[in-house]
Image (tube, rainbow, N blue to C red; front, side):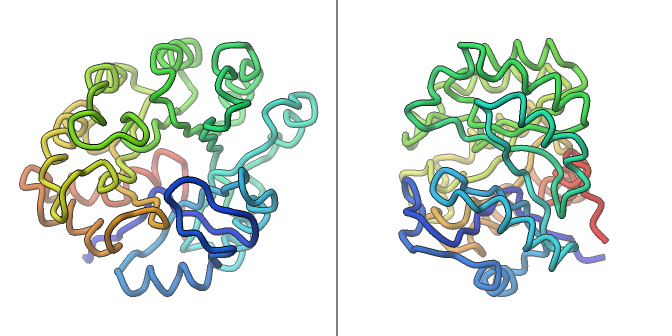
Length: 274
C-alpha cells in the first residue's frame, strides 16, 4: 500500500499581513494549497488557522475541512483571555467541521507572560476534559510546559517546530535540545518536526540538522514525532521537505517512517479520515 503523507502543519488565510518568514501575500487559499499538495504528493494536512494576522482564519479552515473532510483537519483557536465565553465555545468543539484540537503560537508581545501569569490556567483542564490536544510553540517555556503536562496527564500536548530556538539556525537552534528531549519522558507530550529545513544553515539535504532530528526522533519515537512543513515559510520545495525525511535519513524507514509521515499525527489528534 502506498504511504499516506499527512502534513502536520499548514496555513491558509484570506486577509492580513503574514508574520515572520511566511509568504508575503494577502491570501493563500485552500485551492492554491491543494494544487501544491497534488504536485508534491501530499494526501492531507492539519490546518493551523493564523488568527494573529487573519481574524477569520478559523472559519476559513473549518470551511476547507467541510469541503474536503478527507484532506484537512484543523487545530483551531478560541480567545485565551476571555475564559468564560471560550469555555462554552470548546464544549462540543469536535462537532465543528474538521476541528480536532487547538493550537496557539503564543509569540505576540502581549502573550509572552501568558504561560506564567495564570492567563492559560483555565485552558488545560477544559481541553483535557473535552479530549482536545493542544499544540504550542513551547520552546520559550519548556519547564512550565512540563509542569502542565504533569498536572494534566490525560491532556495530549504537542511541541511545535521541534521545540527549537525560534529564528536561530544550525547549532544555535539546537542549543536547548536536552530540555526538549527530556520532555519525551512524559507520555502525553508529542513533537511536531515541522519547519525543520528552516533551522538549517545549508542547502538541501540540510545535513547540519540531521543529527539533531535523529536525537529528537530517538527520544519521542515514531508515534510521537510528526513530519510536517509549515510550507508557506519554508526555504525549499514541499517535495524536498518530504524527501529530507523519506530519503535522506537512513535511520528512518519502514513502518516507523509511515508513522512519522502521517499515521501518528492522525492518531494523536484523533483525526479519523474518511
